[in-house]
Length: 108
Length: 387
View (spheres, rainbow over the protein chains, first blue to last red):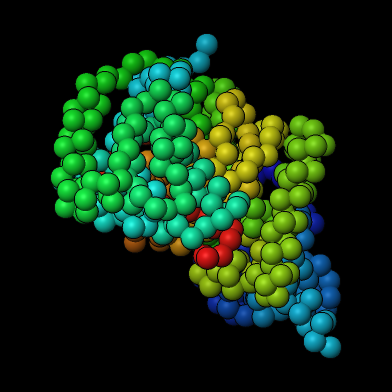
């Protein structure tokens, strides 16, 4: 992973396979913000406020789809997530470290 | 030819960047006596802990190894071991193990000496004499390639994976290029990113061992029947924007740089020279740092986004943040600010150089913020029940 951050973006996009960019400042719903990918500076409009350090969807993500950041899978969507929406614990879940899933299966 | 720095040379050829007189309680029952002696003799370091009694098997061995490793740490110049007299950690065996390094080790027990007051008086006299000897030792030029640096992150937020961890990784690569050692740990915090580290292991046996250590943790989580989320990532990690353990792990691993992984070692096991190693250890900050110090690390480089005051008993802890707000709010705890990476005004190389410079200065004696504030955290990882 090439780690290169250039000036002039509001959110950081780490890898061409990613579905999310990370907010570099607190951003408001309705704001048009920029992130940079291989093709250059991209603009999207935020559907929701995105706090500093949190993730915004830069593509539509389907229910059940793997979600990528750093080019790698960080979890799975538990709802469908539209471009410009906040991506966090309310709409993605971890796939690893899920001792609770075995417990639920055992209870059923 | 490696760059030279001024540090202490130990009888076994290791280098020490500090010269502590360490006071080790073999058991929780000796804590108060050890702490009192530390108060009486400035410059000594005591490591009170909760263990040493009612332990068996691998759990008992782990406590012994962490205490022995902390005593053997090359930043320690001399050791006093204080036993109660009836615990499971054998004080004589502990003294013998630490003496293998050639450093002076004294040992006594509270029951034989006749109680706390006499033990404190005896220990204080002993500590004064040993401190006077330690102070006669002078620094000499030693090669920087003998330096072992541990990399750790704690109180992470989204800036950790984007700025402070990559910056520390660049500094780690500088130490490896110099011929030194880097150790990375936190088995729980490579879950979801272990494949990226495994493909850097120099043999398939080493990558198999790495996968085995992760699966051991996976099985523990399954046994607990819980979702890791909430414990790790922690509530603070989640507030900082990290959603899953996979996301946290993928941000974590960049702190060890890009070198091949030459070996995988157990918690508190001695860190080999020259190259990058992985130590099986929990993500828990103090348990992990204590295990790395027991493995012989000279310095811990600790990245944080949320901010933490963490220090360690026998090793300087350099705190690095990529979060500007945290640096400003907690400047008395933070050593290096690399937040200018995030707006693109500082390159990864420049931020890495800043961290590397700090490592060299701390190796030559500069105090970290944690040392200035007297942080001496110590905690032993447990793997068994109290009997």
